[in-house]
Length: 123
Image 1 (tube, rainbow, N blue to C red):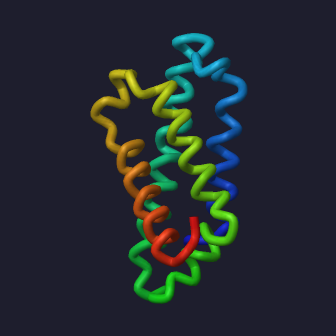
Image 2 (image 1 turned 30 degrees about the horizontal axis):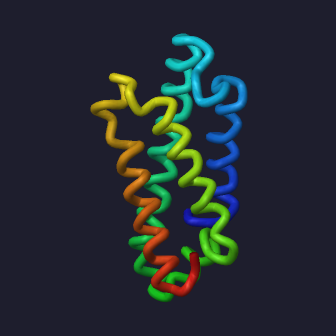
């Protein structure tokens, strides 16, 4: 389901991972880095899937649900983008994420939502 509450919950889960493991953009230890990978990357997959469902919702031709979740002040899509940028900074060079498409696909879904919002006069 594409709702503001779903995205708020997902974003809160992702954002809650960063303060304890990231300090000035650098992870505190290899162990915490691996834990972050295992905890956060799957959440980005869920965010990606949920955004793609919202974009392809045939029951929402006027994009009202998409606007409800991401429109207005566009804070949710901005938070998703900020989380993706933080993940890219921290995890980008990691060999485990090199073959995992969840982060780049989530970024592409984010860009698509941003484009739709701009086309609808927001952003």
